[in-house]
Length: 204
Image (tube, rainbow, N blue to C red; front, side, top):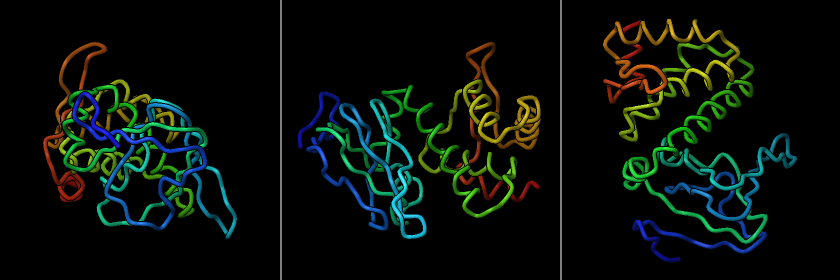
């Protein structure tokens, strides 16, 4: 393990090495720089491969967002891999230095939320889902999200019309929970509450 030029820990894993296992405790996330990582879990006693990640991908990030909860999957190096290791104290700084990682995290959070909803056999509630996503960002101190990217990803994943989602964002802005700043393709959603989910629940 060594320090990268930006001060973050960089670690190499040999092919077939188990990076972490489902059910274990974790306090770190990983940004894959080289190689491939298989993400899998146990469903009805059988192994299910959820994804094969390639650079640049983030995984294990729910350990940062959800604190002491157990890992929800197993990560195994499919090749010799190199990763950046990030803890909760590093995340905000890393996002500031690597703005593109915000889009990656947003994709992961929305996809995870959709999978969790399917497992619970529930119909996704757009309002609750959006508030949960924003709450996870707020909990890490990441209070600004690219507007167009958020609208595109969330509307695609939850199969809703973009205008419907934009109307809900306008309502959140009217409630004083977010502001929509900038213009054109450079708009941003700025979260105005750190306890976003709690405050949004009070507003409903």
